[in-house]
Image (tube, rainbow, N blue to C red; front, side, top):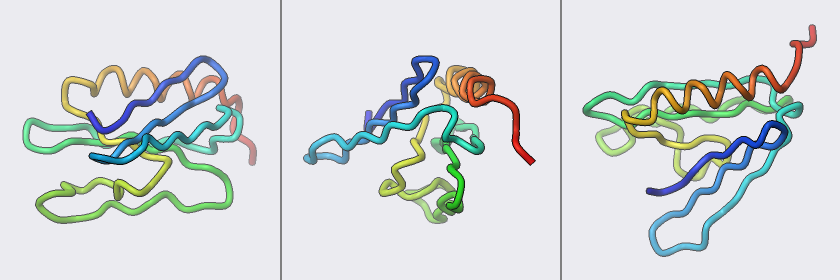
Amino acid sequence: MLGKIVFDGEWVTITKSAAGQVPRETRLRAAEVSGTRMKQATWAFHGYVQLVVPGTLPAAEVRGPMAGGRPPQSDPLSLSIRRKHNDIARKLLAAVEQARGPATP
């Protein structure tokens, strides 16, 4: 596994580690998140979860046989997921959406 995402009810922590590198952690309060994105994994390709923060555009999906339409590994606000994690990822993002509060105009 190249990473994990954890939500404790207030903070979202994404930990990513490339092979042979020190794990890199990104931590955000749910209130700082302006949106979430998810692409479900399939039997052939990994999917992803992605957090969006105000003032930034979400990292674009990279096309190609190795990327499979996911944001680049270097994006600290996204994480690739396997097909067996689709339901867990959906529930986690729903909890983040609920915890971040009402949308502001």
